[in-house]
Structures are given as C-alpha cells and as structure tokens.
Length: 164
Image (cartoon, rainbow, N blue to C red):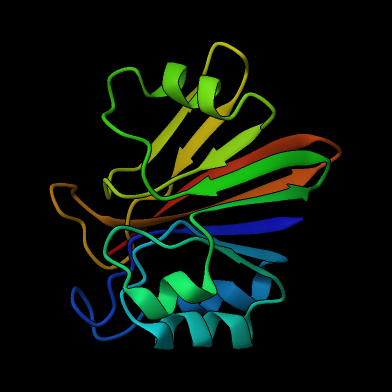
C-alpha cells in the first residue's frame, strides 16, 4: 500500500496551489494523508476528488468549514499498521515520550504544524513522521513531502521528497 503524506499546505496563503510534483503523486498513492493546515476548502475538495482514499485532520489555521468536515485526530489501519494523524504534537523536546503516552495503541503517528520534516521512534516503538510542508519551507532548505509503503505490518521505503 503506497502512502503519500503531506501537511501544512496553507493554500492560498503560502502558495496559489499545490505543486505539480506533489499533485502527480496523488494518483500513484493508495492513501493520501494530510496532517492539517489546509487553510482552504478547495484543496480538500481537490484531494477528495483525486485521491483513492484520503485521511485528513484540521490544523490550527483551519477555519470552521474545514473543522466541520475534518476531525482533530484521525485513525486508520493501513497495511496491518495502526496509524494516527494529528496536526500538533507540541515542542520537539519530549515529543516521543508525549506521543507514546497520548497514542499508546498506534504504530505510526503522522503530524504537522512545524513545517520541519521528522522521522523518529518513541521508546514503545511508535514511529513519528512529519512530512514538512510542500508549499512553505519556513526555516528549512526545501519544501517537502513524504512517501512510504505500508504492507504486512511493516512501514518501509519512507522517503522524504524535496520540491525545488
């Protein structure tokens, strides 16, 4: 099962639209995961119309219409793994410990908010992934997103993609 992970798209505030490179990945993915801060409903509509399956949550910059359509936290079993998606996880220091305590039954937690790519493991084995932002690099050298494969209860081929 091929996964496409993104967060913090901030359309149209940080970009007029999603990058073509990212849009080209949507039909290749079995599941698209968006960890919040969409900002506009048009991006949600686009991904709902083009993704085979979309899992998304709202972020701190998402208004009432997005909050009415999306949960704060989403859960799904993908490729035999228990996934969670949330926008905010708090400061980097102590993140693994906090997330392991908050989400003890998950295998993978996808989050956003910081625009900083992240890939780590908590002491209980929870894998934490932040795809960064495909539209707003903030203090990072590149705009980014992630792809991965979930199959047979394993997450593999986790790859950070840089958008120039």
